[in-house]
Image 1 (cartoon, rainbow, N blue to C red):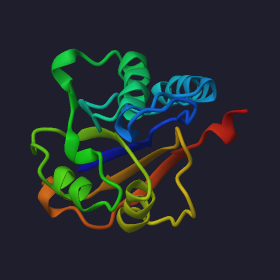
Image 2: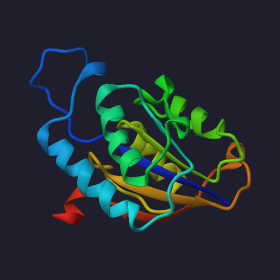
Image 3: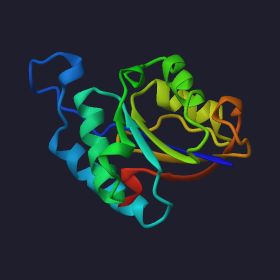
Image 4: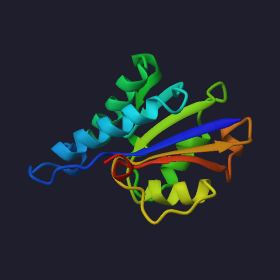
Amino acid sequence: MKTLYMVRHAKSSWKYDVDDHMRPLKKRGHNDATLVSEKVKNEVAAPQKIMSSDANRARTTAEYFKEAFDISEENYELNHDLYDFSGQSVMQTIKGFDDSLDRVMIVGHNHAFTSLVNMLGNEQIENLPTSGFVMIDFEENSWADISTGTTVKMVFPRHLK
């Protein structure tokens, strides 16, 4: 069995005149990422690996989960292919995970993440909110074989306020 944790980056700030890739989180983003990561760490098994988009807002969000789950540097990776908004590169990345890993967390962006949550899970959502967490289990033994799994858990900031 394989388990995928998907986290959309926390709320980012448009206050600064920076390239999209460098946009930071706003205060609410930091607060929501803390809330969700602290809730999730007590409810699910730690991922064996966290892989994040290398965009500033995703990386910063991933670091909250890395700290909450006490993930080592060797099990934390930035991957530019997760800086994807269509979902094609994200899906290729997931299907390329090493099969020795059973639980992987990815941190990235919409519209890709909402689309993939709906495509891979068995529950439809209108929008994966910023800092939103979704857990999907798959019966397959190889990441390359995953298709539709079971949506096991969703934790959104609004559930915690």
